[in-house]
Image (tube, rainbow, N blue to C red; front, side, top):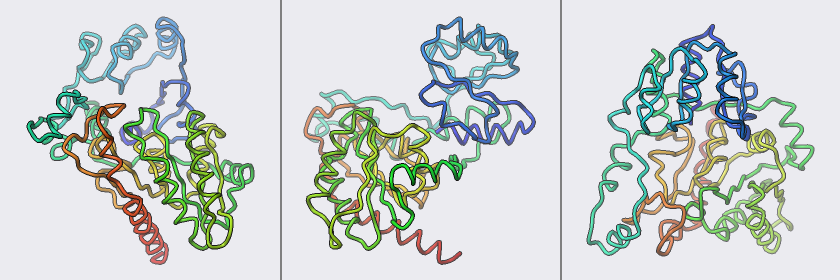
Length: 361
């Protein structure tokens, strides 16, 4: 969700050398990205190690997207001349230009169990009832507001990333993602916690229906921790078959690098997913996304740009949602109320929309 802000920085400073400092596990996302000239990956290096590296870089300007104290302290110790970041967590003295949050900023405040039970009982209201749904600033806007402090445009733009042709050819060959099949991506995991995970059997129900469409197949995505869920979905699909016999099925859970994940996502016609990282990757790759939201708010973290017709959000509206909790303290009604038929209808709409766009040229 920082990509639009980086893109606006590149537009504003077209001749600057832009270095992205990021955690090692995400560094490969930025390979070949036009907004960054180089990527510095950090893992468990100490504070002084990072600071010394920054000093050697002799940077004129640092834009600090994370709100952590350490991220500002690193740049201060690293001698970065100008340090721009949000005034948060007591770090304003470390910033040369502390930025106030946008007026419509909504924090992701977790509800308490007591508050949830009162809301379910209909005996309480919460400030969150009015905030995320009616006055939210999407996180992409939050980052765009930050770069506007250095003169870059805050005008929303979609996040964009790309894979090169050889990457796509490689994953097609390695994993059997043949181009004679139209692929539905299914991403049933969510690292944040079970309150974000739509039930696996419902993903399977949607995948089974789509696998029965002529020429369609299903590719399952996930991390190593998602392998049991992915295998359960694959077993359900294999048991059900389709009208043409065995479903075309590829299970990639735990089998891909980050770049391979991006390349495999890029071959999908549609991705059905929870609110999680691959959702944002698919949107940035131009893949239409159907996102099931439970404990979180699409107004804050939905795929692509808010209101983007290339994507569909499916959710229910219990009074306790969004709670932003990792685990539901009651009955997970925000997710169990979402039926496979609603998600399948959203997939059908996106497919029809993309086919109409292709027909129009």
